[in-house]
Structure formats: C-alpha cells, structure tokens
Image (cartoon, rainbow, N blue to C red; front, side, top):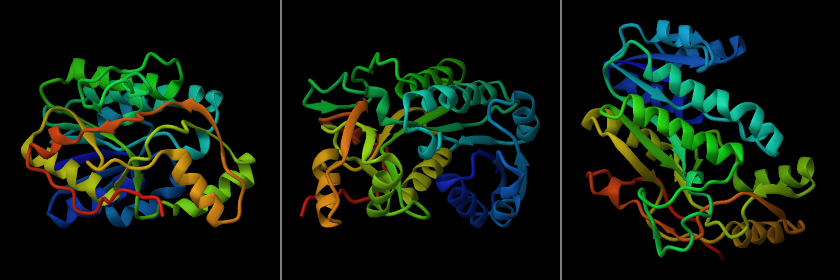
Length: 283
C-alpha cells in the first residue's frame, strides 16, 4: 500500500517507521526544507508542502491508496486566542479540504481532538462520540469541529476520525519540563481548563489505532484515550508544581474540556486494544 502522511511530527514520523517496516511505501510531508534530512530516513519520499496547498497535496497523493492526516497546530504557537486564530483554520480545515478533494479513493484517517466537546457535555455522566459539541468560538474547538465536518461530509464512506486526548511519548517532553517552561516563558499562565480531566494517550497507541483503521477500513468518529478516569488538570499539574517547588499554575480556562468520564467503548468494541497508554494519577 502507498500511503501519504500529512505531517511527520510526533505521530507521523513514528507511523512512517511502522508502515515501512510492514512493507508499505510512505510519502511523508513537512512544511520546512530544513526538516527534509531529518525525515528522509523514515520515508520513501518526502514532500515539502502545507496541507492548505491543495495543488501540492493533490500532486503528492497521485497513485496513493490512503491518506493519513497527522498535521496539527504547534502547542508553542497556541498559547493565546490570537495565535490559535491565526493558525488553526489553515492547518486543520484547509488541510481537510485538500485531502478530501485529492485523487485518492481509499481510506482517509485524520486526527482530531477531544476539545471539540469543550464543556458542552459536562452535565452528562459519560461523554461519548454522540455527546454535544461546544459552541465556543475559540479557534481550537471550532476548527477541529469544522475539519471533522469536512471529512464527514465529503468522505463519509471512507474517513475515520480519532478524537485524541493529549498525545505523549517519543520526543514529547516530560510534564515536568512543560511546567517549568510554562513558568519560564508564560509566567505560569496557561490557557487550559482547570476542571477538565487530564486525559492522555500514548503516541504508540495512536500509531496502532491508525494502522488498525487502515487495515479494517474503519469509518466514523472514535474517542482515543484510556477508559480510566484521570485527575483534573489543576489537581495533577499543581501537584507537580509543588514537587518542583514552583507556584501553582494559573488556568485561564480558554480551552474548555471534558470534566466527566470519556468513553472509549466504541473503539474498543471494534477489537482494538490499548497497549502503551496508562492514566495519570495523584500521589
């Protein structure tokens, strides 16, 4: 199978390695010439393009059997509403438009986010794929929702969307380092929701879920995290702040998130099993 991976970052690069090891031909993309040498050992071909560049995406997709969209906004450039407004639409929505219109008839697998729910479903005991989505105007949930709609409308019969929790593992810095950086560069002020549950998913399980979806030709929307209920952002992060002898973080509550249990029953019901993901816990 010939697969185009849009975005060779934390997940995309690892996916390329896994697919090639299984004999598939991988075309990987990056937005910068400076990353070609880094990505080349993991891919059969490397293309420099942005997902919003429809013609370049279509050229890269020629002859491909499937497209996987791993491209997502950089956390470093998403700490304010203004930064999110500038980048999320191009990276998420315009990429989706390029992909669904590409000359490929095979599967499309795209990564979305649990942030699409915002706080809209926090009145429920359990949040699943059918639960209400937020009407928050912040660019993060708004653009993730819009991208999902593009895939669901134009490629419903072949698109699989994973609403991922925070992705950890591989080159992702440890939580302790992220908290230190938040204090150093953001004065301890972060856009996250203090009461939202700190759901995470391991990079390797995201890769495995994508490959599972390609093999089984899964379609539809699936939550991708662990079934256990984790602590809230405030409880978990501030426990680590105390351990590091740092002040508590200030949560600006710009990016609302689920504060109720998130169900992964739909994905687990397909036969997929998590192997690398474990919930965070309070000491």
